[in-house]
Length: 559
Ligand code: AMP
Image (tube, rainbow, N blue to C red; front, side, top):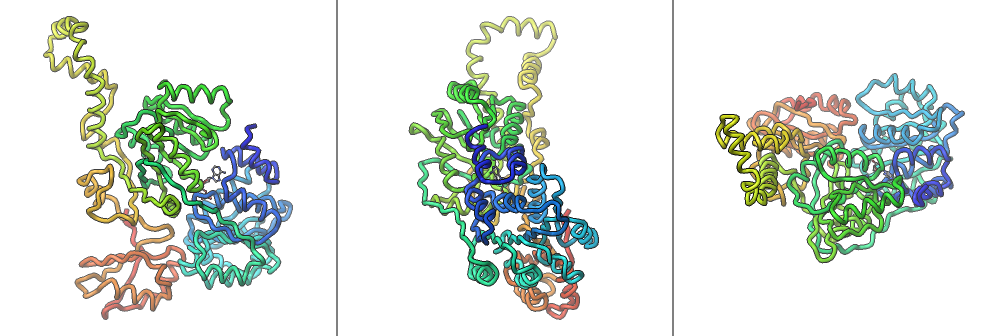
């Protein structure tokens, strides 16, 4: 066992929980976990200021699992989450950490799915209920006792829940749970509305905040790229096509991720290796030596395994998984730009991790520019450039060594010099696509777009022409938990965005924050609304008229 796995073992968690966490590939607790777990285990109420990406889910899930009495088949812990996606994600995390605790049952409760099976699962002995507030209130209306055995309550992303208009639902839920419960609240921000909830519903809460000291970053060129979690490996492979690197270190969070990415890189012909806490010390040294002398070009590492790694050849750091805190970001990217050389650091950001990016920018006092995935033309140009570079030293001498053979082959094959050269090129490039149409077919990625995007702003690596194309193809991304709705009323009906906004706010009773972008087109309009409670909202708006005409808002699916 490495010293770091002692990190989890030292936290006083049940050995089966520690074993499950280690089996998941986590090597050491993140800062928020290190601080929150003992507090929650000790039974205190707690306010944790942390955003997605810090490891906050495990920070509450592990100690709560530790407290569950498996022999009792009734709800003991309730986790509230703002959206269905987050509720499912949290429920899955609980299941992962409870893998070695037979008898633990988790149920996810959210809108848009039938209520009956959810209620049955709760009654059939789920000890952990992960729910969105709106749907949970619907259940409470059917069975007001359903939460009467809950002893642990977690509000995850409390600020998001308020933004989505769940304040009243939260009050109903607080009232339905015994006052003797332990309450933990996680929120990225602590506006006065959250503080007031904490004052009214938490008892002498302990505060946990990951203090971030301002960090200085040396002259390393930094960029970030928005990408969905399941597209990280293809995104890395594509980026590598155009990045001119000497040696590169890619940071991921788990052992499994080091293995997966290293395998994908090797399969593409890169000289890559994984470095994680399972790798024995002598093997680790061998990997680092190989990176130093060029037998390896890419090392895929966890933070723990990369500790103390100092290789001057490193020109690039790829943060494939988000670091837990700005300090480790600064630490990671400090691996490049050594010895006065140029360095480049790239950070992949999933849509849910945008906040973490903002925190990094705030703490480092620097903007991390947005980069784009290189388009097919850029990939093709880079491939041809590499091919040209690999042939350049040969053309000077190969004629002397292979010229006669070439003459003989053209004679034997009865073909032109161009035909033979083309055949040799095809063989040498090993099936690699080297024309635009073929490269385009190879690239199935649909990049995501950030709200930061401003038209006309040049991204640092992308090409403007391709960007226009992609924008037409890819719809604007929706914020988590939002859906698009459509009305047949548009500009030609005399509608402006403010009329729609006013009608929905007044008649629908939503908070302004709950309504996203409104796009008014000539013959229709699109409005982004919260998915949670959508049916209720649409039925409230059933008879609403705008500019004298029926609004008739419907969910809009753009596939
Ligand atoms: P969260 O901030 O809870 O959304 O977690 C973000 C990601 O970090 C999830 O994919 C977790 O599986 C992962 N994660 C959480 N804690 C650790 C840890 N101690 N080591 C490695 N990965 C972790």
